[in-house]
Image (cartoon, rainbow, N blue to C red; front, side, top):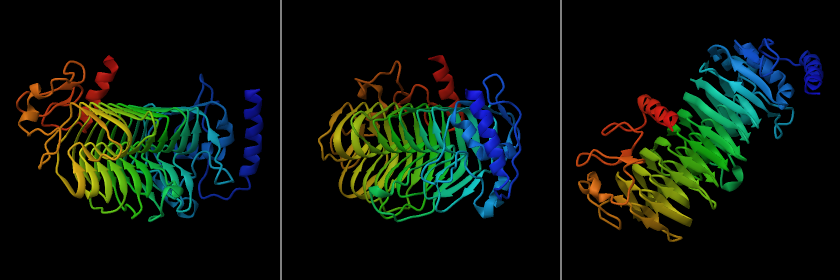
Length: 444
């Protein structure tokens, strides 16, 4: 039945393609899309074929990237709008849900361009469902659109991403200063909207992001999502006056888990927005957990600005921030504003904090009354769980912490760092550190 469906769909799509005017030429890849004989992608024209035949991919289809692809010519395609995402349909509100096993084989798609100011569901794929994407690199690429945009996919559900990297790329929201929760811009370095049990493992983002709501280095708006052993180096630019939920790893994390992740975030020349965090912008509702993760960089905004979380609650455990933070109110070394039940344990923060009022080394505005245990900071003037910087370099200061499996310290000379990190004074976000993390995971 599956083979008959694919044959029938192919016939219809080939006929309909004859009536589609395009700047680019599709070329059928070799293979049959099966596990034993996947579609083999050798050139950008093969990707165009996938885009034009997306209905074939609504059932599980196997695809392999056989070599590096230079897609820089897509900048001039389709009257400047670039590559048409795989899964684009005639109805812009309902993309085709693509189901693929995509093996990148460590190869790179270079210079992919999508510039569709009013578009949504933008990325290499429009929407993924029940898919697996692994060993794929997208580099030096540019994406511009309205909402639900990610370099790999604008939307994803029940999918798995492993060893996927988006590097030196830009995802730019074409509309700024949109107000409030109703806009749902949802822009992520890899996926814009992540829902229904997606997993990101050992993934990476570096580049520029802009937008007004739910903007994150790995995923923008994430529900029931798990991100593990991943790194992000995000420059947040052109943040609108009403921007909210902006994070180094996830913008808006709902019932999600972030474990062993590293964020280097730059969102500093900015006086707008709220709910901006080094790891997650918003964290809630209920079971959101952030463990064994850290952030470094500079963050500024209006209110609810935090080194790990901007606004929300959940569990924050065994984390640290070395972010410089500036804002009006609700500025905290670990979390800016506690807006729902929050447990914070075994965390520390370093870095300057500048605020007009409601600031703290661990929590800025404890609106919901958090539970804090064994946390430390070096903020002056001191305000709860304080310790001076020299004390924070001594292992004995952290009597309840696990220095066998989680933490390490150059006792007397540096601050705690994770067992899988490069020792002081190096910060975790380097290529070497990422490889070191990968070695650690492979031993587990």
